[in-house]
Image (spheres, one colour):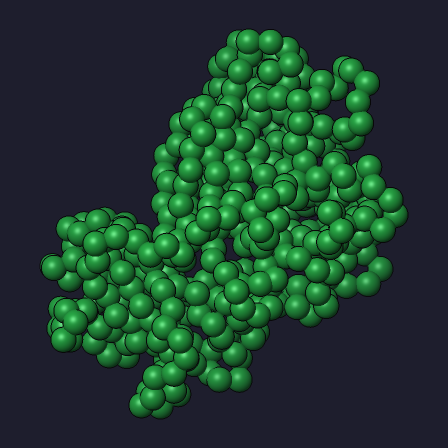
Length: 427
């Protein structure tokens, strides 16, 4: 995943792959990406397509897509070929994804040619899932670890219950060797230890004072016998461009009955250095037994990122610092910030994390972006009516190095919320 610093965006279109072939047996199509509001590099691009009859019944992992960019007039192909990825969506339909190297506002448009063909097996440079059954699910790109979804649940002892009472996501560093995020690390909070706030774990969502049926439930530190329990995986997709997972998670009372049924989807995109992780987090929270009020406080509720405990234990040079979208922000009071970026040191390196809040998320969001040990997140209060579902969307970008300039972070955010369009210009 080598390359340059980048901005990010997604692109959507409805296109058709027609069945004319070339000597290699590949099917071809031409695409045009419309103008964008900000310069974008390494752009996640999506197009809804109709497959030809020859490919409609072929498994997605047996279809290879290669894309090349064309000159503005369309006469010349240039640049290295890049991989695409198909995700089947129905009978004869699919999403075509690729990472566009560059979409620039001044260009007005970019042209692409895609070659689609059947192959015997996937390339080595792809995402893949590796399950340590009953414990955690690793996402790898090539041979390196990218993320680790901690989904185990074990109530055989108080210690194991503490370690497994909620699922969360770990992030690895660029080599895939060391964790950048915090976990329980086998430490019991009732014993003397050196772990600072071990209930703050990795990438996680919850509310410390969820109200239901006239009672308050702590779906953060999981007090009073409540748990967030992984029920099953609903989807695992992986390829050369992205990996997507979807899990059903029940937010259970002390009797093991769900109050909220969550369908949590994560999408991780192929990116180039210095980006380590580009993660889209989309969750659907359904109130399954009655009205639910999501409540708590900015430090113990919402959608968070928590840096590794060594940031808390380290010296001043590794402590977390924060950047906001403009000067003079008071994160304890100012609401509905579009994004917050954090920088911290770990293992003699520096990392930055940008946390992006989609404008469709509930209003009144407050960012707890001030703790120097590297825990920050977006918090709001919201009622979910009985039987209704609340959908939330966030984007997390983790990269090596100091926080980039504010305009870069703003560009990332604008690309997240305002996707350009694509159209077919030839078949």
